[in-house]
Length: 276
Image (tube, rainbow, N blue to C red):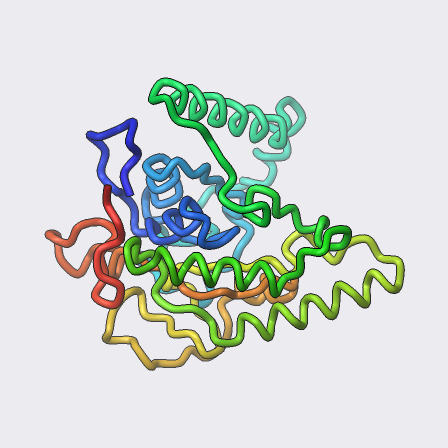
């Protein structure tokens, strides 16, 4: 999916399926991996803000790599005393402030281009991910089951065109029901929140291993039906946080290394992700 304001740009990046799914409101959160620009490129060309707060913090265990150092949810390089450097930096600059400024600048730029093309930003549905802040689930009638059903409806309606989702988790609704029960129990006990990811549907790039009914194939039929030994490290943390694993997002098959002629966003299982 190309940015309409940058016609010269390509779809770019093996995580395009993850970015397209968020851009089209088919899920609230989608987790991709870093393949020399996958976070930057799909975010740029799909008008989705991409941030990477897990560098050096998240295990690569269970993630199909493009290379030992390049494709990762966490470490992208090696540097001695990296923690010391970041600690020193935090004495002068607030990471949260930098993120706030960056997001604000991106929003202003995006709205400016909308005005230039006589378009408006509208919320498709009052239950849309634009109003999804997880703690509100404790105070609003919206449930995790309702969120999952909404995104499943969006996937059913849009995925035949966009081809950004390879498969949905048959246990997603069961996970949502469990999250709703846990949240109600917490409310009865007077607890305000179980965490910002609790009960929130999340799509995973199809190179991130899950020990469940979902496949982990990197977009290839060669791995279809194979099983992984355990959840990847990042999925273990997501489950612990109470997130609902909604399904697997498309990607460039084997990160595009199957052939130099394969376009970004194409894989055998899903076909070509939508390019406008």
